[in-house]
Length: 226
Image: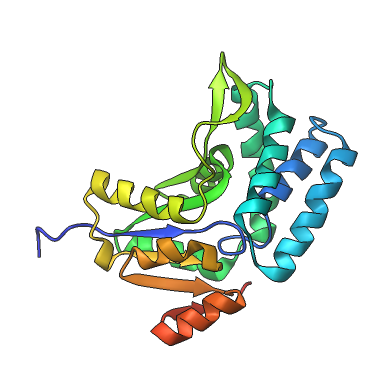
């Protein structure tokens, strides 16, 4: 027992740990901080409404939204954006948290499990959320930084779909996690690769396709949001 490998719990962010799209809250925050105009946020508001209603995301829409994000922050100071992200997350996190999932985060911590946020959102948002609720860490999409400023390009692809599973595998190798004893939480079928990479997948208010897969495999389903 003493030599048993540690395990971890991996959490999706949008529509799982929080309600709605973190990118929308991010850009709304940029408007509040007067870093972008209200006109620029209109498209994100519409996309967020669709996202909340359908609980779906696909590579094309994610890439489109991601490129808009990159265009808006291109040329801006990375250090300043990190500070702004901390303030933005603090402004929305309490009201948008799924407290049932937050309870799961706390339970895993009490059991000695590492807790990781794994999201397609910018890593600056992922790290701010994970810090503010006391998780082990947050992983998200990384943008290229040149001379301390955003270049408008990604370092790699968005942390979405199969890429999340690869990150989980990388963390497992780095920290020697036993993935068969580990846990993953998500609302979307797009995170199926991540859910299948652990021995204990759990679904949170799942979209229709993921709900069907969960029932077929007798996975635990969490439905209470508040």
